[in-house]
Picture 1 (cartoon, rainbow, N blue to C red):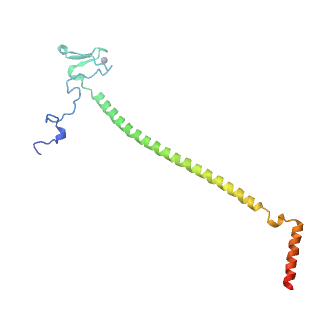
Picture 2: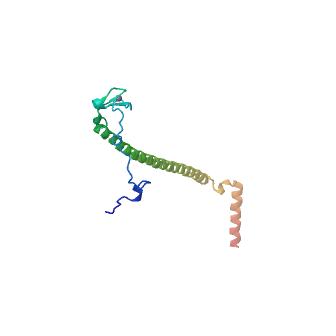
Picture 3: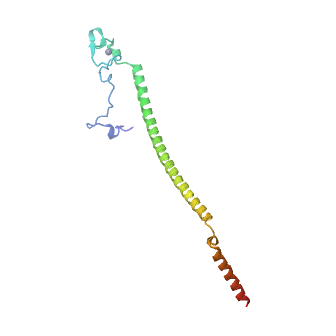
Length: 160
Ligand SMILES: [Zn+2]
């Protein structure tokens, strides 16, 4: 190990080792009342007691800030909150994907509807064309006779 085992970023502006903020008890501060949350805690060194001015809860001075159960519960809360944040992110992501997919499905439906309309148009056109009478059907009997006579004449002419 070198003399200075802390990189520069772990030193404060005075070149001293950076210290993370200590918990209240290490700073010598009294934590709020565990029962009512009040910060009005009175210390009576003569009888070695801290007590809450609001709800009268009391404990020996050295025990007031020692709260393993509360600390464990707070740690668990922090853990669950962090997990919830991650899950919320996943949920948001999943919702966005779902919205995208729904938009895609909507446009596919729209496309399909347009194609169905076009098919119906083409089928109608097709049916109309099939129903269209052959040109001969328009001819009058007189015209048919003329046509037949002309055919007969050209046949005779070719015989001559
Ligand atoms: Zn209290």
